[in-house]
Each structure stands twice: as structure tokens, then as C-alpha cells.
Length: 241
Image 1 (cartoon, one colour):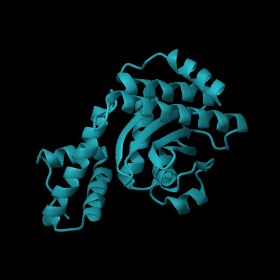
Image 2 (cartoon, helix red, strand yellow; image 1 turned 90 degrees about the vertical axis):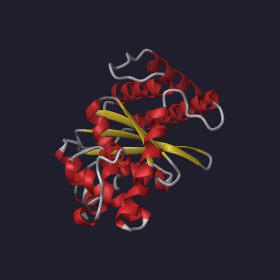
Image 3 (spheres, helix red, strand yellow; image 1 turned 30 degrees about the vertical axis):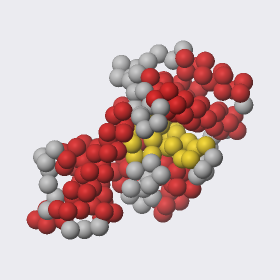
Image 4 (cartoon, rainbow, N blue to C red; image 1 turned 180 degrees about the horizontal axis):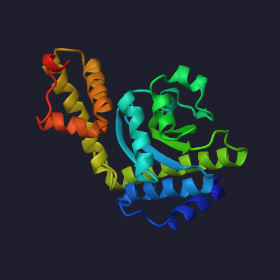
């Protein structure tokens, strides 16, 4: 596995950075997604950080279209990424047909309309600690080959090592280099949930559901909706419930 990881890291190191690539850990993860897309023959790859309570922190992807696909799962509150994180094991959906529709009744038609026909999600974890998920999207149906599956697991391992190394360099209580925005987005979402909870007089879980529903209806990223709530540019009250 070490030899495989070394080869994957070499591929990532030689992967050109995209125009919107971040720096430090975030930039490396973006290049990892781009390298995985080319190596695995898929249409796009994304890495999402998640907290133990399932709240999304950041999506880093091979391209803007794939980043939007990552966002869809968290706006809708369902999808392979969320299931892989909760189950602590890969969720492989080689064909988004009736089986996927029964499992994710809202996510499946939405992602299908975007041209995606297969999704493969790999949890990023070490021991009991869960860090996030690596997602592969493909526009053609069919399972991963044994070689592709093995390579995807190596990419996931490299992503875990990258996150842990970045956190170690940052030190206790600090965000890994380049990931400050992720931590800010997570804190902003928590704050927005609390504000909507007070405005509507509903439990915290329902406040998050209202935020997701609004984001879905308006075709907006969940983080953008949370930002508007915190900035008091958007208010949820009983007149708009």
C-alpha cells in the first residue's frame, strides 16, 4: 500500500493546479481530486469534510460542476456521501436506477438530471475518527473494476493522511492550512440554525431542514443561505414557513 500511495502522491504532485485551487492542504486536495478523475476514468471527484454530527464543512472538487454535485447531497440531506459517512464503509451505486430511487428518493432524480449515472462514496476515517468522504461521479453506469476500486481506496488513504498532516502542522484548535474557510462555513451554519430555531420556535433539527428546503427551492448552496441568515439578509418567520 505504501508503494501505491507513493505513486498516487507523485501523480498529485505533477497535477496542474486549477485556476481556483486553494493553497496548502486545500490546494493539495483539489489536485488530488483532479488526479483521481484522470486516473480512475470518472467524470469528477470531490472531497467533503464532515463533523461527527454529519454537518458538512467543505467541498473540494476536481471542477466546479462536481463541486455543485457535492453540494446537492447536503442541500437535500440524503445521498451516498452521507450514507458512507454514517455507515463508515463505502457506498457503491453503479447504476442510479430504481434501487437508488428507493434509497434516495429526492437525490436520485436530481443527480440523474445532471447527467450522473453512477456514484461511489468512500469514507475518510482513521480508527474511530471520521473526517469526511471521497466521492466519485460518473456519467456512464457500471461498477468500478477491481483495479479502480483499489486505486480509489488509495486516493482515500492519501486524503486522510493529507488532512491529518495539515492538522498536525496547524496545531491544537487551529484549522489545517487552507481549510480556514471550511471551519468558518461550519460555524456559520451552526449559527444560522440557531437563529432560525429562535425565529420559528422549532427544534434545531427542523431549523436545519428549513434551511435545506430553502436552499433547494432557490437553487442556492446551503452555505450561502446560512451566510445570508447570519448577515440578517434572510429571515425565516412564520409568515414564510
